[in-house]
Amino acid sequence: MRLDKTLCWDGELTVTRHDRETGVSFIIRLDSTRLGPAAGGTRAAQYASLGEALDDAGRLAGAMTLKMAVSNLPMGGGKSVIALPAPRNEIDPGTWKRILTLHAENIDTLAGNYWTGPDVNTNSSDMDVLNDTTEFVFGRSAARGGAGSSASNTSLGVFEAMKATAMHRGLGTLDGLTVLVQGLGAVGSGLAVLASQAGARLLVSDTDPERLAWARQLGHAVVGTDDVLTTPCDIFAPCAMGGVLDSAVARELPASAVVGAANNVLADDEAGEILHKRDVLYAPDFVANAGGALHLVGREVLGWSEETVGARTRRIGDTLAEVYSLAESEDIDTDSAARILARRRIETADSDPRRANPFPEGSEMPVLCGPEGRHSGT
Image (cartoon, rainbow, N blue to C red; front, side, top):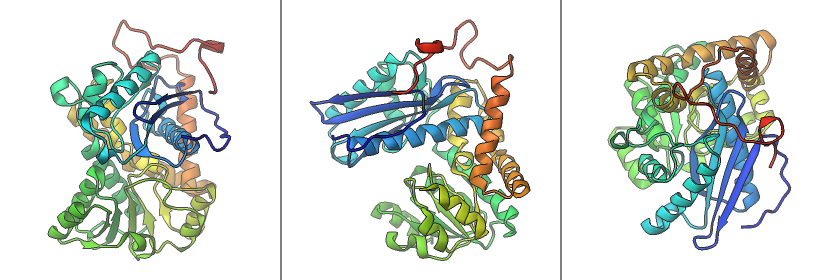
C-alpha cells in the first residue's frame, strides 16, 4: 500500500506495521492521553492508499478524544485501522486469525497506553481473539469476562439524542415524524426499532439485501442508496460510514435535523456552519453516539452496573441540551459548541488533582517514555 501524500496530524503517537504474508497494513493512532489511556475501536476496511487509512485513523482518534471528554470518561482518544487487501467477508478464518494476532501484538507494545474494542467489521469474538495475546481489550464476550457488544447501548444513546434534538428543534416527540436511517448494521437496526416503537415513520437504506428484507418485513420503506441525501425527512440518521455531509450536501439536505451513529459525519468544517445557517439542527456525532463508550468503559473499567450505564446513556440528551444552549448563546454551529464543551471538560479534569485513576486500586496508569513522559508525533 502506497503512502501517497504527506499528512499533517497533531496527535501524540502513530504506530504502523505491514504484514507481507497477508498484505495487511496496521495503524494505531493515539490522539490524546491527557485524561487517561487512549481508547478506541478497531476498524477493518479497505482503503485506496495508506495515506487514506492514516487520515481515517487520525480523524477517528480525534473524535474519540472528544467523545471521552464530553462524556466525562477518564480515558483519552485513539483508534486502530486494519487496512485490508480484500473485503472482510472474503478473508478466510485462518488469515483473519493471523491478522488479529498481529494486531494484538501491536497493541501490547503500547503497554496499556491504548485500549481497543469492536468497530466496523470487528466484534466481540474478535476481541476474544485479541485477548489471547493482549489484556488491553474492551468488548469481549460475556463468556470471556467482557461486557459484550456495545451496539444496543449505542442505539439507545442515539435514540435519546434524537428525542432531545426533535424537541429542541420544535418537532415535538418522534411520534409521526419521518426518520431516515442510513445503514442497518447492529446500531442502525437497533435505532430503527426504537424510533419505530416511538411512533416514527421509518425510511431505511442499506446495501445489504438481507437487512433490507428485514426492514421490509417490519413495514419500513426502503430508499435507494443514491437517493438517501435527497429524500425529504424530518430527521436524517447516518449510521454507516462517516463523511456523509460535505458542504455541498449540507446546502441541499432536505431534513430538519441530523442525528446518527456514524463517526465524523461532517466531511468538512464548512458543513456544520451551513447546517447552522439553514436551521438544520445537527447533533454532533461524538455526543450522540457515546453510548458505546459508556457501555465499554463504564462496565469494564469503572465497574458500573448495567443500570448505571443505561442511566448515564439516557443523559446524552442532557449533554446535547448543553451543546444547543451554548451554540445559541454564542451564535455558533453545534459542532463547534460541542468541541468547546469537550475542551472545557478536558481542562477541568487536567486541573483536578482528584481525577480518578481508571485502573484497579494499587496499579498505576502506564505512560509511554519519551520527552516529558510521552512520545509525541509519529
